[in-house]
Length: 256
Length: 281
Image: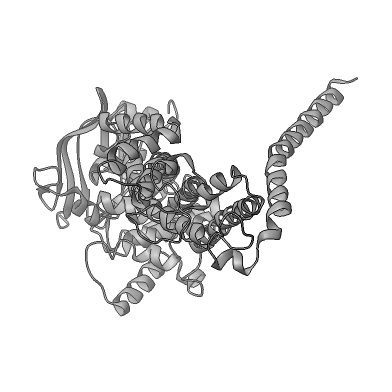
């Protein structure tokens, strides 16, 4: 037997609502460290809502509520007294559409998360910016215009800038919410390669509506349908020998 | 006529109509400005800016007292009104979107926006001039601030609402507290629009006369005392224009031109200062 996988983030009976409407129902799922877990499912299945529960972003929507538990290092992030702001500093997130801050330079976008919760010297900041941009495979593209306009970058570069911004504060977990759905195929490929690198350092959870993408890049895959977690398994197993009929129907294209 | 040709014709007619409408809308502006320059430019010289008004029977003199008074009263009024208006607008957009308090404030601001400015003058007279036993520049500034707050509040709210939600989420996901997201990301992104809205407010109160009639009153003398009556350009235009003296009429035209120019210069300066490096992608 190989070593038991390290689990730093998991959910227990997680239910998310918008008002009376249940978006995610009773989802229990563990995410292995240094592993890329893909979450797939048809539109409206609750996969993005589930992801947004993991960094307490869901509750900010109007009428939204969460029950159940999300454990980060065995501590419930929804326990009373836990400050969601500090949780979000430990769990980074990359969104569907690249969203660099338009009023900040490329450099200041990358340091935005570094400066919120601690003081950091100029030299450390410069080093962190270079490290994050290199890790996001953007350093060579922007090293001569660090103080330039982030919106002058291409869509794929902007998304890599957002990834650099997310990893600069060295979070423990990175959530990706359909990070390539607004990008062209070339940019998509480069982001997919980058995401493969990220899992060497982080626990990575990626929502995608693209099954081929999940099959290409993820180690494990979770399938959501109508707000329920249908099954979670090693990616190859899930795509070749799913346990559940609903999973098989979805991956063979019978719905969704 | 084919259907296509008819479509093109309709398109051309409608385009022409919009151009004509735009020109018609701008026409009064040009006419006012041309009129002001034609009648006011001749009275403007160095003395006009550094001397106070002459006695009615004499010619010459200037409007120094009114220029300084305008700067003081509009400056003080904006100093009170802009921070309150901008913060209230940020509150409405960021925190008061779906709250009862937000709805009440929004409704009151809309009502206040429609209130005739002379009513606000009477209000300031009742609550400031009478208790303080005298007309004062301070009361004038407060009246102007009350006038500008609802305008600035609503335009700020609109500008803040235009900031895409994805930027708020990006900041929150990085671990920004809510207030910091509002200030260093949302307000910063909306800032040029907020400034433009604030400028419209400043320009609006710079030209107000009615609320000042009951508060700052006007004065023939140079004064910088906030507790006494003070002249402004708008008050001077009003009182000199209805006076029987030819020399004062000319001063009024000159004062009108200066007031227009002040608003214009101030607007351009503020635009220049707030032009951020990364606005245009």
